[in-house]
Image (cartoon, rainbow, N blue to C red; front, side, top):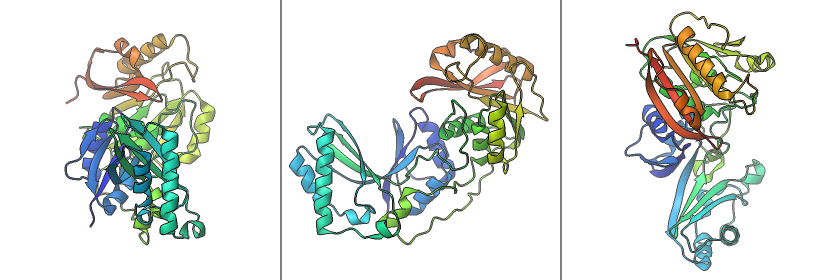
Length: 373
């Protein structure tokens, strides 16, 4: 089987968790972490498995070629002479271009040259008309020119991987599914007994659905590689990996937005999820057995809260840890508020990850009860 080079795009800060997921679900030899992703070598079956089962990455790129280029005539000649028929399924692709420390500093002119070179290549080696018969969408090629070295990659994913196809209803400030998956993988790390998962401010229930489907193949959407010429004639094999799911006895979500919960309920009816209308900052949470808790609390920006955000969040944090006392408690907060939450009595800090969510610097925490084995 042919070895191919891939770049796995991951939200900065989540690279280590993404690599752990790769090692668990579709391991490869000698992957390399760089900021914002993971470089690795694999084959087409791995590409299928990765798309179906990896929940933390944003998308996957196939490295096609790289070469030195210092002027536009050289760029045109390279593009015009390249064998596009192995990769191109639509004559008008989209170009994502980035330059740094390059003599070709004008991205507009780079794109113009790419289009002209591709048109010349297509004149010499006409493209199959399958894109018309089968309504193939335009592909996206990523062009990176760093220190005059051009790297050309094909997006083999299409819509971002966090668009699972499972839920369409979202709250006012939803957390992306791949962030939720990463946080859950850290929350459940090392837990070997059955627990009840609780999200006390669940919104549209992203944490709950991601937890229950983390080890299930993604099968409700297409991928860009399915229309690529190098994949022609193959069928995506939707095989369930032989992995134990998170040890969740029950998944329960609470929220003060009763209307949102009513809209979300039909979308998750096939999953063992309970959605309940309640203000958990004022009502004790009661579930069967041991509980782990995770939430993405409102900060008072897009979702209204009572009083100042610092006071609101501090009161909620203290209530959850002292009254509800879960085995583990996790949430994500603006980074500038991190100092307000440290050393809770009866708990020890298990994890702390700094990253960016929607342009906002945030910190993800996991605390564990001190009496946990």
